[in-house]
Amino acid sequence: MKTYQAVTLAMLAGFGLGAAVIQGLHAQAKPPGFYIAMNDVTDRDNYINEFSKKSTAISKAAGGHFLVQGGQATGLKGEAPKSRIVIIQFDSMDKLLAWFKSPENTDAQKIADKYATVHSFAVEGVAQ
Image 1: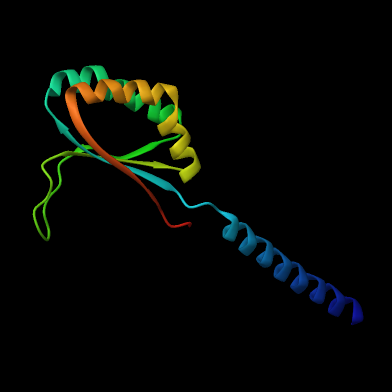
Image 2: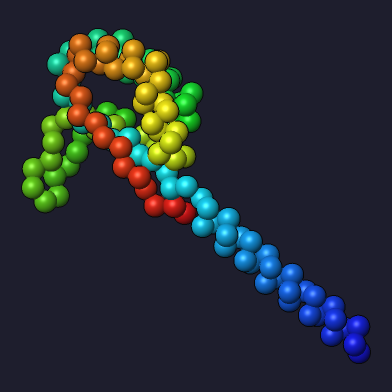
């Protein structure tokens, strides 16, 4: 009888320890970073051919996941922007900033500036 009690107690302790470890790992998870841009494009063909294709490849290589790419906003309260909307998710704000400051992206942004006015910012999401 004592053996069963010891095994049961050991199992309960194991479950408790496992739950505590998992809770600690979740607490350490970094929240995702979101790049959001509103682009007022003045030359659509060159914007797509010279910038967008290049920028997409650079973003994906850096771990970016496109949630919105060139979408048009629909106003729900107030007037929606007429700009092309881009939202890219990165695993963390650190990865987003590394991508944004990279020489490849900096060069691509110079191309974008020829064909659009870009308004962009980064937002830290909620850790899951």
